[in-house]
Image (tube, rainbow, N blue to C red; front, side):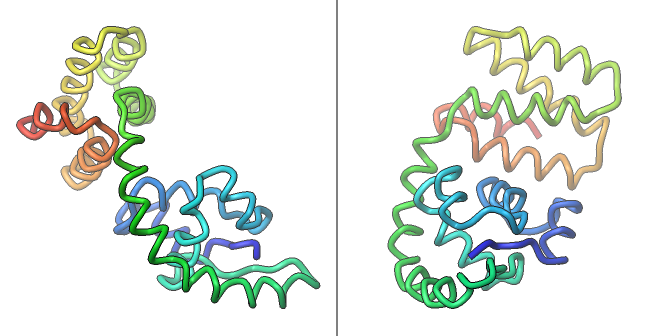
Length: 179
């Protein structure tokens, strides 16, 4: 099976308004109709087949196939659906382990890079050069304080939510007060 984005997925990726987490968004971006589920599993980990099935059921992906392999792919799909509850339940633990200050830093760097404002560019450079943990946390907080002046409140809320998904749990409290 070679999953392909639907119009709903394209709209969700452009509007940033869909109830998708970072891993689901990443999966949607990678589903171009050329990659197989095995390719996606190699890129995203063992929970990729279950996420593909969830996104197919939600209407974000269509189950594209490659010619003669269509029948085996259709047979394999129900088995993946039956096994989906186990990886999804286990997926909560790896996501927690993947929380890191580096991931949060990279995410905010990407957000700042998209802003067309001198303050955002200066903060981008500062965050990029920050190495000490305290310094990185200060720069991340500064970015979250600056963002409402540059973008809409809804966008800020989504960025804040995704940042909290990436940050290690011990640092989340420091960002709860940055509103």
